[in-house]
Structures are given as C-alpha cells and as structure tokens.
Amino acid sequence: MTPFRIALRDWDWLTPLLLGELGTEPLDELGLELQVERVPALPDLWSEPGLDAAEISLSRYCLAVADGRSEVVAVPHVLMQGFRHRCVIVAAGSEATSAADLRGGRIGLTGWPDSGNTWTRAALADDGLGLDDARWFTGRLTADHPEQDRLGGHGVPGHIEALTGTPLVERLSRGELDAVLTPFMPPGFHSPDAPWRPLYPDVRAAEAGWVRRHGFVPGHHLLGFRTGVAPEVAAAVSEVLLRSREAWRTKRAKYAETSAWLAVDLVDEARLLPPGWDTPGLAEQGPMVAEFTAQQRHQRLHPSPPQLTDLFPLDLAAPLAAGRTYR
Figure 1 (tube, one colour):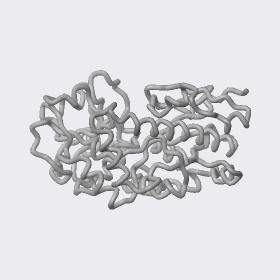
Figure 2 (tube, rainbow, N blue to C red):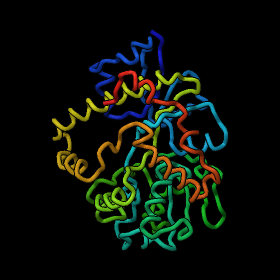
Figure 3 (cartoon, rainbow, N blue to C red):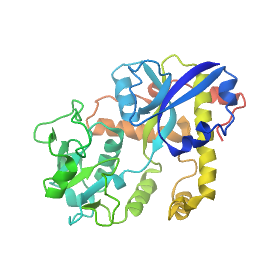
C-alpha cells in the first residue's frame, strides 16, 4: 500500500476513522493507505514537503487561483462550515447589540483576508455595518498568539491598519476597541463573569436570519490536494472522510448528553437549516463559494476572483457515477 499523507485540524468527527472503525475500501481499491496528521493550525500545502492533501483555507485558495498559482487543487468538500455572527464580541458593559451600533467604531480582527473574517464582515454588512462604516485593526487576539502579518497586503492607512503589542482583547476591555472579530474565543469567554460577550443578544436568531436570506451556511476550509491528483483519488479521500463524519454524527445523536443542550441543538439544526447544507459537491456548495468570491471582490480582497470551474477542475461526479456514493 502506498502511504497518502493528509493534514487536518483535530476534528471530533475523525474519531471513527482514527480508531479503525470504518471500512476504507475506496482507498484500498486504489492501493492507498491514508495517514492522517492532526495539526493545531492549517498547514501550508503550497510549500510543505511530504503532504499529499490537507485542510486548506477557502480564502487563501481562491486568492491563489486568482493569482495564477497552480500547486494546489481543491474539491468542493467543505471541512469547516459555520456561521460567523457568533464571532463578534464586545466588552461585557457595551451598549452595542447590533452591527449598526458599531457604525463609526473601531473594530479589531485577527486577520484581514481570512475566510472567517471575510464572512463575518459580510454578516455585519447584512446588518447595517458596511466596510467603510468603521475603522479596522488587525492584531493578535491574546498575548499567547504570535506577532505576525495579519493584513496580507490589504492595509489602508487610516482605515485598515495593523496593531502590535497590546492584544486585541485587552484593548477591547480598556475601551480602545468597540468590537473584535475572532473565530476562536479567548480563554475565559464562556465563564459567567467574562469581561466580554457576544454582540448579538440572540446569536442563534441572527444566524437563522442569515440562512433564511442566503440559503447556505458559510464555508471556511476545503479539502485540498497537490495538483496532479487523479479524480478517483480525490473522490476516495473525500468519501472516507465523509464516512467518518457521518458515523460520528450517528453516535453524537445517541450520546447527546456530552453537552447540556446538544439534543436540542440537533433538533434546531434539522428544523432551521436546508437539507444537505453540508453535503460535498459543486451543486450543494457552489452557491456558497460563488458568494464568497463575490465578497472577496466586494471587500476589495481581489479585483477578479476566480470562477467555480477554475476553483474546482476535479470532477467528483465521474467516480461517483461508477457506483460509489457519498451517503
């Protein structure tokens, strides 16, 4: 068997695959042995040696394709997908409860071109805070995060600028910032006496409003491969990962007591989200990705984002037509 190395975030749905509870026939038939490496941050598939595939940033991939880079090719299998209204935090004593309340304010964020922050800015614009309605500052969230370039070449003096030194959450607590956009909450955020809170008093209602208006859940990370991978290999890897996710979800529904309200959350998910919202495939994920590239153009991240056919040249439908199914 030929080793096939893939680097992924440490998702809980990998558990059945890592424990050997799943059949891997799609890969076995191709003579491949999937070797999963769990990583704390997204790897650089464009330059990291030895990797055959990885979880990659939707934003970075779109920008790379737009710039003519061809070292990596992705398939429309979204590995990280979720709403972003939950990612806007304010000081506990803030009077702001909507995006419109932040007009004219100072907003910090952990990276300007990031997929998640691009979607969060889109959500804020939906609710009355346009790109030109605030001053934006990139920086590290906490003192444990490194000082690094978070503008990605998109700085605009007096409008979009970098902050160094004091972390964003400390500036938020001091009143130097009116809000912070972050995909991962700072330590202590979920405690009852946290110095910060979500901007939206009812985050779920805000996110349900998004899906009613747009019909999809924002995607952030894709399944990417080194260019040259055969379509049947891409389809096989995608299928095995999806099998693991489906097996985990079946168990999660049975053992819902791992979280106080998970059973209720599962009912709400089925009630509020469109069927197949997280299914891999261009038919299911194409409208979401098309809106993301439109946001990249609107938010001035790239003047000419790529078309869907340029982003996803691998045809997963062909191997599936031979009798293999995702579900």
